[in-house]
Structure formats: C-alpha cells, structure tokens
Image 1 (cartoon, rainbow, N blue to C red):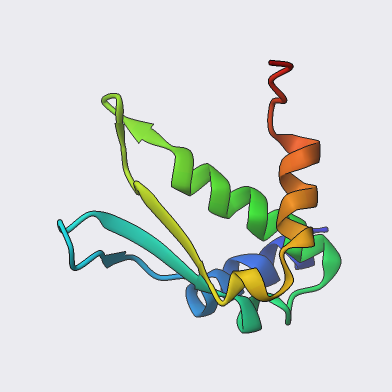
Image 2 (cartoon, rainbow, N blue to C red):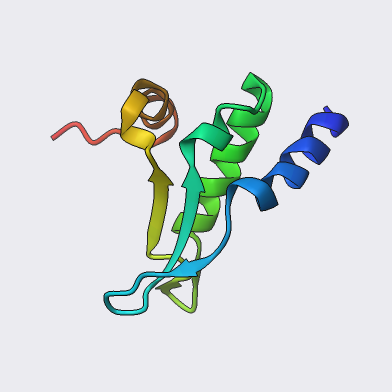
Length: 93
C-alpha cells in the first residue's frame, strides 16, 4: 500500500498541473487521460480520490479550483460514471 501511495504521489506531478483558464483566469487542474491509463487499478482509485478532493476543496467558502479537467476523458467515460455512481451522494428527486 505504501508503495502504491508513493507511486501515486510521484505520478501526480506527471499527470496533473495547475493552470489558468484563459477566459476569466479561473484556476484549473488539468489531467490527461492517456497518462491516467498508466496507473494501476489501486492507484487510479487513489488518484481519482485525490483529484476530486482538490477540485471540490474550498478555502474561505471559495473553490480553490473551480475547473477540473480530464483532457480526452470522454473517450471512455464509464470509469468516471462508475466512480460518481458509487462515491457521490445520490439525490432521489
């Protein structure tokens, strides 16, 4: 497990970097799907947890990163949909 966390930490710098959206200067976190695929299943889970915690984190009731982008992520969407269906609150409306 420790090795996997280390690998995930090391890969985060390769997969994700902060940036600014040119239309309005919002801070964003881009990650790239082709790099994401290189992670093991366990590290994919760790990275997704890390990524979504960063995207939805707030400081002083303001989003730190209002935009979380998975570039080329719609090529194969079911993994992301499965993650949301299991880990995100479901509204019964």
